[in-house]
Amino acid sequence: MKIGLVGKPNCGKSTFFKASTLADVAIAPYPFTTIAKNEGVGFVRVDCVDKEFNVKCNPRFGYCIDSNRFVPVELLDVAGLVPGAHEGKGMGNQFLDDLNQADVLVHIIDAAGSTNEKGESVPALSYDPAKDLRFLEHELDMWYLRLIEKGWDRFARTVNQERPELKKAVAKQLSSLKVTEALMEKVIQKLNLNTNIMKWDSNILLRIAAELRKATKPMVIACNKIDIKGAYENFEKLKSEFPEYLLVPCSAEAELALREAAKHNLINYIPGDSDFEIISEEKLTEKQKNALNFIKTDVLDKFGSNGVQKVLDIAVFELLKHIAAYPVATNKLTDKDGRILPDCFLVPKDITALEFAFKVHTDIGNNFIKAIDQKTKLIVGKEHTLKHGDVIEIVTSK
Image (tube, rainbow, N blue to C red):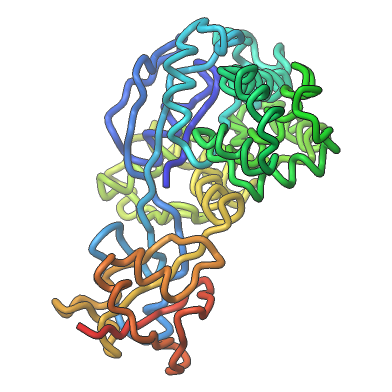
């Protein structure tokens, strides 16, 4: 899966990306610092099951700290968005093409209102961040509309003449937008659309575009720069104005500082935690001490975390509705090389044991006999639905 980081220039998007990945990216207070998309690996955090079995896991991918398992996900930091992107303004065409790869979006906004609609620095609280949410919705809806309208007239005439099942025909036409028959049926019912497709005018197509965008590009809002005075008041207003979104108070700079400090063995810090531990205070400069104190008192103590890890977790587990499941080759919780709980897969919450086997490897799926739930020691069949945190031994014929 891919998580797309979106937002206007200078909102802190590249800082969020670097804080999540520790990748070396350009960060600067001017528009279009990100010219081409940055791609990297971030992580979602889950409670590792190793403590339930009184063992210590050996992840092949990601890492585990004190039974906090960090499972890798792909992050895309796409070029900054400005109004008119769907018409090619700014880095618009590149932005939207890159964005099409994402399964879920993190919209990073400047909650302090210290950047205007063009991404230019302005005094804090002088710009209303609600405008950023509205304009991104508009740009994405217009982008979807543009893609829908491409070849639409000819398609509509064909449907009108041949009279295929409407949801199936439209879903096939819009398959590049990840539109399924089930989704199209919901949209047709919700908008109470006329079964005569020739009566779907541009206004109706725009409403369809908005519904499809909401379903295929779910979005969490990272309210960045929350540590600036007045930003929290803006955050509360945004929550009232946009109840349909999950909004998270966030300080990407705080997370980046903590991750860098931990990397250089100055502090003990687990991403997503509400606190950190200074390892050796005498190694810190006064500037570093003051910065860490500010992060503790003005970010962590106030909000419970700096929000970066929480945003990624929400994107995967709440918006995409995925779960974490562990495949093992033996009842000793190991793979064939003896590594304990080596893999943790992020999979849809309604996945079956057989589907999970195919996720692990095609050969395992093809030769599936049964699965064993290692927590309950019960044998389960191919139609058994997995739960978050399941540890599954898959028995095959080969």
